[in-house]
Every structure is written in C-alpha cells, then in structure tokens.
Amino acid sequence: MKPVENFINTHVFNLNVNSSKEPEFIDITTRVKECLKNSGVLNGFVVVFSKHTTAAIIIQENEPLLLEDMSEMLRRMAPKHLSYKHNDFSVRTVNMHEDECPNGHSHCQHLALGSSEFIPVIDGKLALGNWQSIFMVELDEKAPVPHREILVQILGS
Image (tube, rainbow, N blue to C red):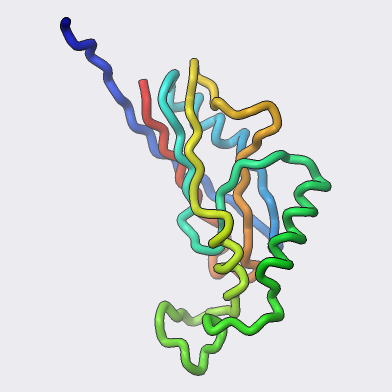
C-alpha cells in the first residue's frame, strides 16, 4: 500500500486583547474563527494560548448570569484580601519589575483555569459544541501591560 502524502500547514496569529477589570470574561471566539478562515485550514486543530500567568484561556458558555457565577467562584477561591507570600515585596526577590503589583490571588485563580485550549477543526469549522465559546479570562486588574497577547496556532491541511 502506498502512503498518502499529507501536507500539514502551520499558521500563527497574535491577538491583542484589551481588558478593564478582574475577573473579566472576554469572548474571543469570533477572532479565533477569523484566524481559522485566514489560515485556509480545513481539517486539523487550533491551539489558543495565553502568554500571561494572570490571563487564562477557557471554553465555556457565554451566558451573562453564568459568567457572574464564575467570577464569584474565582473571588471565593482566591480572594484578593488574603495574605499571599507573592505579595510580600519586603522578602520577594524573584521576577520583580518596576510597577509590580500585589496579584498573588490572580496567579492562584489562574492555576485553576489554565493557559490554553485545544480545539479540533473539521471541514473548516471549529468543532465547538452548541453553547461553547472561547474566552480569555483577565484575572489581574492592574496588569502591567496595556493588552494581553494571545497566540492562536493552527495546524492542518
């Protein structure tokens, strides 16, 4: 039997996502679909990846009351007012920068959410379920950057 040649193409897109509060659920599904369309990939997969440790990527339902519930869950899970060693600038010496802010709670919330999602592509479409949307979740109100950088990598043919 002769092997079939399959050419895998790789496409990388950078999305800049602005946020204004924490936690904030920002639906980026339409932007990811645009990337897929521009790639021309019909079958393969998409990886959506946050380049930040206090901005997560999740797949969830875009329903306003549910988003409020999830925001409240994050606040209960790692409240801002608790004591975090990461926030003690009198002893912390690693990964410090000039406009460092006390955001230990944001990092702890991120631990539960994660940095990326992997979505199959079938016949040129994201294989998302009926109610699934792709979100960037801002977890740090005082992010040191004006926007978040989200990487969209598409592999397929």
